[in-house]
Amino acid sequence: MKRSICFFSAALVLSVSAGAQQTSDPAAPPAQPAVATPSSTPPDTTTPGVSSTPAAVEQPATKPPASIDQVVDRVINREQALINFLKGSTPLVETYLQNLKGDSKYETVPAQDHYFLGRLDVSSVVERRDYLQMQESLWGGLSRPFRFRYEPLGFSWMIFADRTNFDRNHYDFQYLRREFLGNVRCLVFQVTPKPHAGKALFEGRIWVEDENYNIVRLNGTYAPDPRGAFYFHMDSWRLNVAPGYWLPAYIFSEEGDLGPGMKKGNLSFRAQTRLWGYDLAKNRREEEFTEVKVDAAKDESAAAQDASPLAAERQWEKLAEDNVLDRLQAAGLLAPPGDVDKVLQTVVNNILITNNIEFPWTVRARVMLTTPLETFSVYNTIVISRGLIDTLPDEASLAAILAHELAHIVLGQNRGEKFAFSDRMLFSDESVYQNFGFRHTQEEEAAADAKAVELLNKSPYGPKLASAGLYLRQLQVRAPALPALLTAHIGNSFSNEKGQIVRLNALLNSSPQIDDNKLDQITALPLGGRIRVNPWTDRVEMLKTGQVAIVYVHDKMPFGLAPFFPRLTRYEGTTAPALNGASAQNAGASQPQN
Image (cartoon, rainbow, N blue to C red; front, top):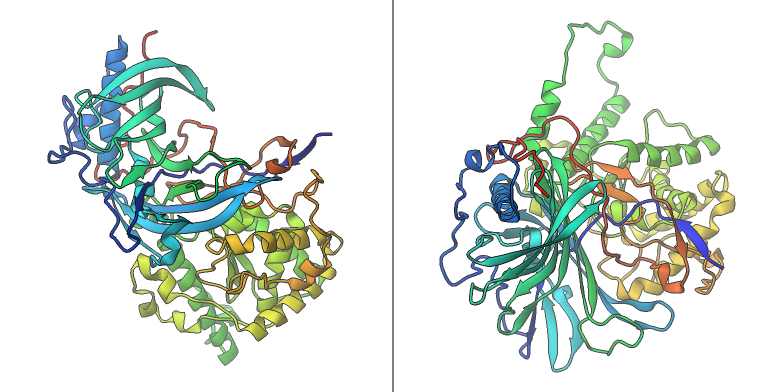
């Protein structure tokens, strides 16, 4: 009998393919994936027949293309326009990767995982500045006498088909068919490097939307492989979140002959890469400033007097809280306030009201944009990561996770008063994790767990906590292979250094056992199952998808990684700010001739 489950958010993210290195000397420095110099000749940033200035590439076309050759010219033109447009942006790029091994029930399960987070700079060459220190976790699956090293820059390389040589001199373009991706009709082309055209050239297929001829999807790899290394395959998607431009947003990569019979030691993995934070912070601040309206007013109420010592203390704490949240948002790690926050705050309020708890302030909730499973609280604001929301199977599980941080607030276990001094916000985005930390002692964590269970038992979620316990039990099963997913960078981790789950153990111990053969027992969702991020504005929204039939055990994919198939739509909204002074006007609004 088929079972079904509603996955509230589709996996909208793609992981970029990375250049992997294979070497017999583990200490040897990794070979460069030919990122900055994909050919032996000096990089030529212009495309034949196309001006390198944004104004030239942004001129709207007056006639529809009369042939496939003219369509290809438009595609090359628009790709160069995108490169110029992004020269002033430094988006965040995040890659989460799982090495896989064969399993008789799930076909494959994680054997090891890796996590990379950095800021991408495409001003002149593709470069990145990492938020996390690169340690031994870089090393992939071991197999004597070789081992593989994943290069974070390689996972960022596939945002373009070819940054320097995407033209007819280096590539052959073969038209294949028309195809819809979501609401967008596309032309599909096979792209093949010309013989002896150079190194690190794209080989695969591109999907081109048929109004302005922007590339919206790339699927393939790079060739030829450099000596001592090789390029992974990738499926890269772009979203139309700025007028006239489709920005790289998701990349999925997979290698290996996956399945229960896969050979031990072979390189087998899946990876997802997400990009966001394209819009410059100054543009958001300028937009907010233009919306501020100040009316002349005078406060003559009793509350307009000097603050009492207690009121001053609370205002000081609120200042520290707001400073931290603003700094995290400016660094691209925290989503702006939005509708998802209201959903989270509704759950928190359900717990507070049924426990007869009333604060003279509002307990807020915000979403961190990163994948690792993490929560923390800054005074009266609960922060929960996107990856954690993605994998929670239902509202009761979400309530249990939020209740733990709410318990810290109820118990007055606050952190961060020193951040009321604004000079303590003066550090680079890449050093956020080194400057912020809101971790509690083991005693405080134990007290918060006990208080959380007490709050939950009196709430509407009390009778439904079995699902929360199953989630933690499944996390315990997978924890030894998922240290990167379970590493909290600002708050307390769900597991200890031995891979044992230490959060809400009372719920874990009282939960039923996992029965993999019960198709209706969903312990955890795959990553990407609930939240969609707008890569331009960083805003998040809950996804609503149709029911998906669970036919096999491996369909459950707890904490797993899946390919991305976002439903593409065209941009609708107010004009977004242009980057690098480039015009945001659509080019070539007419359709090609059949």
